[in-house]
Every structure is written in C-alpha cells, then in structure tokens.
Image 1 (tube, rainbow, N blue to C red):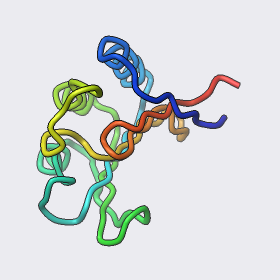
Image 2: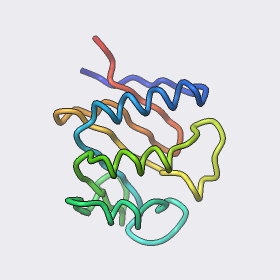
Image 3: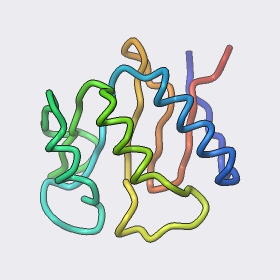
Image 4: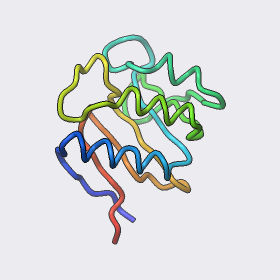
Length: 121
C-alpha cells in the first residue's frame, strides 16, 4: 500500500487521525539531527522511553532515527507533544516521524506538518 499526501487538516480532524493511528501503531520512528537544535525537539523524552534505539538516519546528514515499540508511554508522549498541526512553534514540535503497523508506515509527518497516511487501495 502506498502513502498519500493529505495536506493541511483542521486540528480536530488531526487529533482524531493521530489518536486512531497511535491506537493501531506498534512501532514509531522519530528523526532529528544528531545534536541539539530546533529540529531536535523531543529527543530527551523519546530517549527515556523503554526499549528505544537510536541509530544513524539516512534521510539527512548527521541525523538519527529514534525507534521503538508503541508503548502506552510512547503514545502518551506523542499526544502530549503533537497538539496541533495548524498552529505551532517549530521549536516545540516534532519535525519528522513515522507511525508503523506491522512494519508498514501508516502515518508520517515531515517538515513539521506535511501529513501522509497509508492509502486504502
């Protein structure tokens, strides 16, 4: 199945979509530079989650991927950090991440708000 670009959605729709995607997900991947800076928001919190791994990410030079199981703590963290897709402070929002179910990316955010979801075809 392919992912399709959804584009801007109202926050009420975003919260429902995020919650449903988190409920189905069994894994997450968060991408950020390997160091401090505005694109690294959430790094400390994600690294504290149980069973996470940080590894180099090929999507950007000097970047890492923090990956782990979608535990209740991970789900709560996403819900706490990803409050809005319409209005946000880039220094307080996740820059790039994916939610996966059975190894398939079902929802992804790139560049803070570029939303893609798994198509139903």
